[in-house]
Image (cartoon, helix red, strand yellow):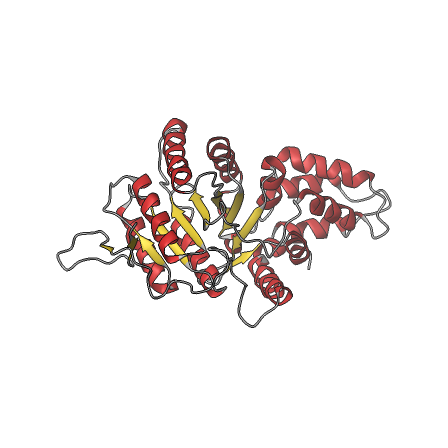
Length: 350
């Protein structure tokens, strides 16, 4: 077994990694517990502290949606006469906010039948809250198998912020005390390898990368070897963002899964789909396609701060039954926050 030092570019300009002897590195964990004990969270803070920080960041990140479709929604609901608000306008506003036509109709139908003492706004808010799946803001990927690190495959189309999201995940987990290994398995795009290397340097993560065009499965296998040797907590694998057909995507991901199972039999990796919030219903179609092909287990919604149509969150969870795990609310590394459904709705209606 060999582990791999952080990826570097040799002076001759070639791209690759150099294996080093298989003895246990000095930096390996010295505890006698399980090989992958997990990580405790942000140092010096309780889970409640972490949740409060994320909730505050989330509130700032949804300002455009709060002033956009939710602001219009509240103005309609707040001027209701004796016959109630204009439910047609409510429906149109929900659709304009990327909630989706069928779901908007269902929300309005159910809200009209509710008998909320606080009025129609409370009824609509309650219906929106009911759509979101229960979620633990303290969620972290669990070990993929006994003795294995957590394994996260990150999928999505190019241009959604996939590689940047991986870097932000690495930063978050590193700040929480985790040892992170990045697998640069999007070998079809040389820029993705270079971009991931920058994030590794920035976040203190290790990275395994081969030359552009190399076999993505080989990259993942070497990354798992590196994680085992260094007793890492989590492996985050970038995957190709431009496979032209479902068949190609399915074949590539199936191969990666076989490799993971070969290295850690019975492993169950997390599959996070990165979705650009500004793409609206088109992004939902992408998510549905990837879910059918790759078995997505969670969503990372990027650029939520850049859209006034944050209703896409409701559409995603209603249509796919998959939880949103993280949302991107800015350009900084720390602007990837854990998604809390209650905090999200509260921030929209603040």
